[in-house]
Image 1 (cartoon, rainbow, N blue to C red):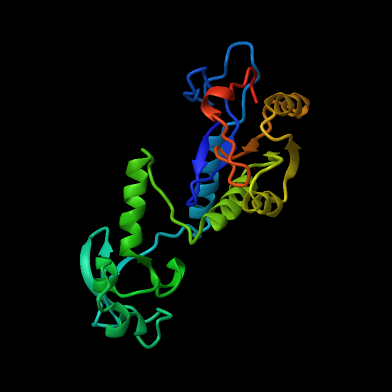
Image 2 (cartoon, rainbow, N blue to C red):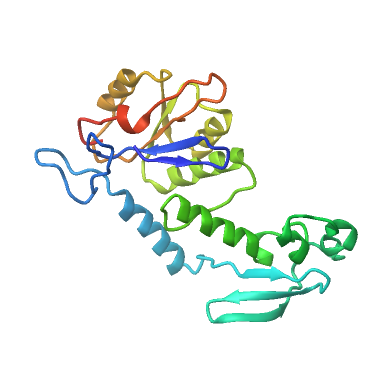
Length: 246
């Protein structure tokens, strides 16, 4: 099980895979002796990214640092260095995000130097420099290659679950009965086959997994580590130990 932490501190997705008793992940590329070959999740996601690039739909957002008081000028932190640019695609049409009344006395230094508000979506007006730095810090904290900040924990759960499930062919989602509504909405939006397992009942989860189709079918096991409505805790790393190829 791979827990992925959302912005609210809720672990929202567990991708079923083989793991040892200590919780370290076994490579999906190394089939266990006597077991059917598992679905290769890494290969599937790599294929999806390659398809985006091949179709010229893969986007790299401009890392922009707006200059408070110099609207519409900004610094573009490009791969080739930093240079001055003019941002004509911001939705901060009148530059009010940089108005002295908005930023004066603000103890949050980036806002005082870059102004308030996002200024538009990343697709259109670039990525806010402060967010780029925050995501780099979060990725380093969790030992990951990269991180992505959403507008809320609800949106991260809803969007993350649906997006991941849609990328996996014929995906089966198994969801805890007491998952947060944001996670339920993500499961619904995925449009995949789904099954609900009784809250924290690992035996029931095992039963559903045993009835599932071929071991090579991709699955998402969706659960929380701390359930916000009831306050109970599930130690996923130590308790969930699949004894078969999932």
